[in-house]
Image (cartoon, rainbow, N blue to C red; front, side, top):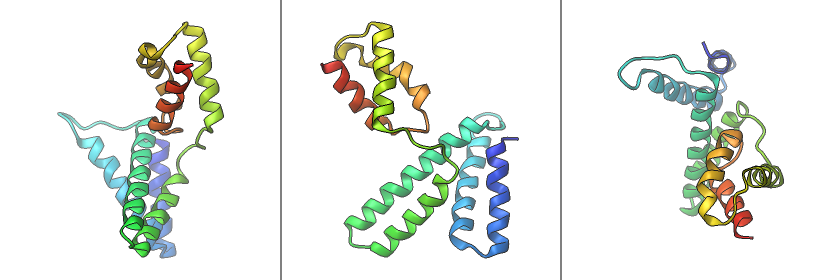
Length: 151
């Protein structure tokens, strides 16, 4: 069993005992998403930590987008609730990369691969994505790579 999934389940039980509703409800939703992924497809399968981490990243992004939508709609209470859930999820994610770290990684890939110009963006992204998965937003990575290849 995935260590991350085991940790999520243990923390959910602790939240239940401590009557921490935000953490409890958030972890229940996350574990439901994990279980749905495990049983999807033609046969059920056990997820690895990297798969669980990918689900956590997706869940955190959904919370951020929902909070932004609620905030734009003037519903600050719901926005704060979504941000609280996002904070719970982020505890289980690795430290995000800074833009300078992403830029450094991208420059290394570009120089080692001899990539030039926008036509090579797909090749650079294909190499860079596995290195930054779960630690950087794809949109940010894409913008950085595009900027480096444009110069």
